[in-house]
Image (cartoon, rainbow, N blue to C red; front, side, top):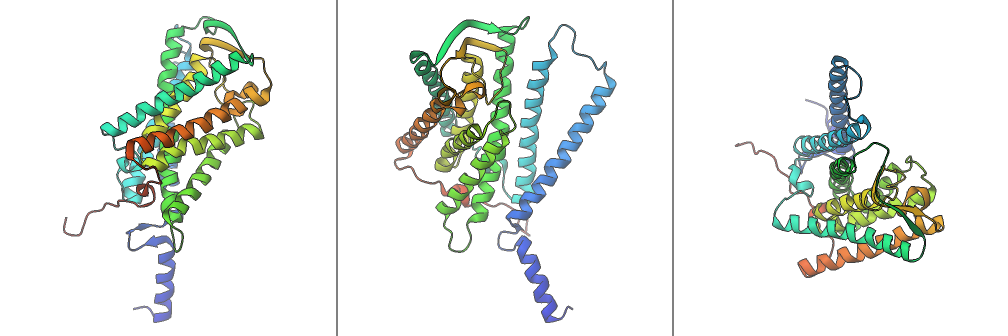
Length: 337
């Protein structure tokens, strides 16, 4: 038996990393352990890809442009990987189910997702119409693709790619990280709404930094993407579900890149239903980074955030922070089970 002073010291150390009441690690250790899970799964995936690539011809598929194929495959694998990490970390570390990270896929969830998708499409269409009307954009072609590429094939491929990117980014940044930060920051006198606000700000800043290495990125584009992070977090913070941000993220990107030919966070896709060229000032259009870095994009983000608040108020009666985000519904097996 340990001496009393040493026993108290050990208990203090344990309490720093282990929440006895919740029977799970505290926030910093949860995030570290989740990073370890992600690293292990990434290593296994990389090993598997290496073995497959080593056993093949090593060349592109006959008659197929392997670039878009590999892009789509990479995005799908990333989405599957993120989902696996969150599912494993949720059960083994967080003591939660995957659905509790904003994926309760009931009728209301799908209705909110449809609203988010319609909103993303409407906002980017509005950016296009205002920009063309003000001569900040010029239409240069219809159904334009890179040389030798199939418009239908690329459009369909990017449909899958952006759906996968939306799942990966929303589940990782909003679903898992924001939820854990909101739970972990709610300590002592810090209330749930304040903790949620801090988590939203932190994850939105991270969201901006994650895009800072994209082509044509600037300090202004990074700040604006951070603002877009607040925009995407609004639906989750008000409903506790990823439905609105998932639908919104998907159509926002797809409409930018495929429907109107804008750069998507600095990336040109090589296909456009309506090809456009920026002729106005970069401050307004976003220049080579795309509308997200310009005042048109900022205006769309502000309008969209207001629309989300109005939608949630109409659906629920009174919009406000969703307590489910910072109040975990923890699950574990009792000793009797």
